[in-house]
Image (cartoon, rainbow, N blue to C red; front, side):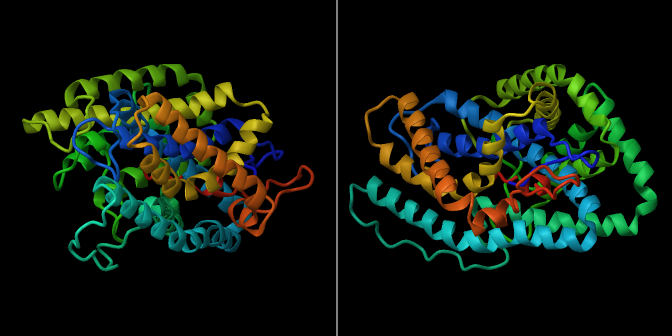
Length: 408
């Protein structure tokens, strides 16, 4: 990815680079854990060795990863707009968000389908499965965005932000006060309440899996639009008063401790084993949703603060991983699925299998990034041109300046 820099002096925000890379790479860890879920099969393949520990890892990562991603998207999106202006912003986002969606979806979707067929054949003892119902046509309601849904959602959020900015410029001070209220409070109760309302109102939602991922259909579900849209908006407005980052930096440890406590409480209510059941009575659903929203925003603010506090220095390794993380996330899912199908029937213990999946996947993805992407037109599309020397004027950020990512 292109460098992420401040407006003043062109100093790269190394801490936010680290958080951004973690949000994207965390998606690989999340998806790699899904074949080990205990209980009924919920993924394309079910491993012969189950792991409650990996289920908890998935739960924790899924709680905050995409809200964190979209908050950074809003923050760096506004930075890009202020740096490039409207025309430059539109060109950059179409080139680094729209073009990758159009380019990579026709590649990753057939690969995912191939992995699904492979898993079904393996589960049936090597025999081709019996003909089943015809797959849904690619309609507006059923279009399979796969894990690239985050790019599609960003293409909705960017113009919405620009339109609201143009229509309600007078509301800037009000938005600043609201953002200050959210960030300066020790407990992020306001965004947690909005999240709880979005999760609890409407159709049945699988509580253990949090926000319903908008990976199917071109009209995102209200949950995702509300929660991820709120995160994007908070990030956009946060850039208007970047001094609030110092508040997050000072309180990172408290925020993370609060996040751990809220997450533990949620798991005590819903249980550590993945389930699509809803708790009852209704009051328990609301209480769980509020705890989930509190955990989500505490993780988000705490990790941003921790990145600023602990990783503000220059690191070639973190810089490289941040640059590679966009490519890694775009291509990881079919590769991870294929590796899961390979190791699923083996008699190895789950820690060895999980480590083998991650090791093999990252070896392939990092090697392909270095050899095929980093210095190619794909690298320029994803990350922008790599400057030969430090620039006096801030360089327009890449995906990190525009995003996530996740899903998931």
